[in-house]
Image 1: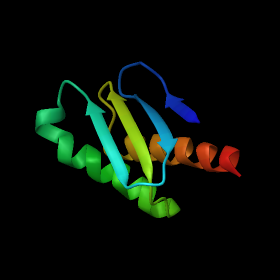
Image 2: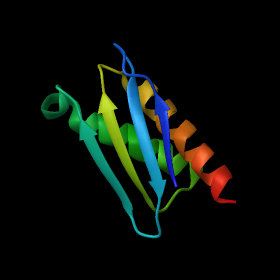
Image 3: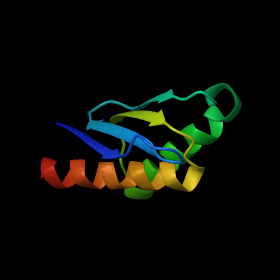
Length: 86
């Protein structure tokens, strides 16, 4: 099951997650990925670790979101995915 959270507007991001049995796989799509990709990945990993998620494919389409926004969107999408998984 795929869950999406966020909006395609300035200073936001769209995070799409799908829970898996493997590791955490992160894809970032952003104009500034070369400059801030590591910070974005750390925000995504931090959100997953906060919730104890071990396996998920997480795709972030960034529109200038700050780290705390990326982390919050990630956690919201993961919580929804976990609640629907059972």
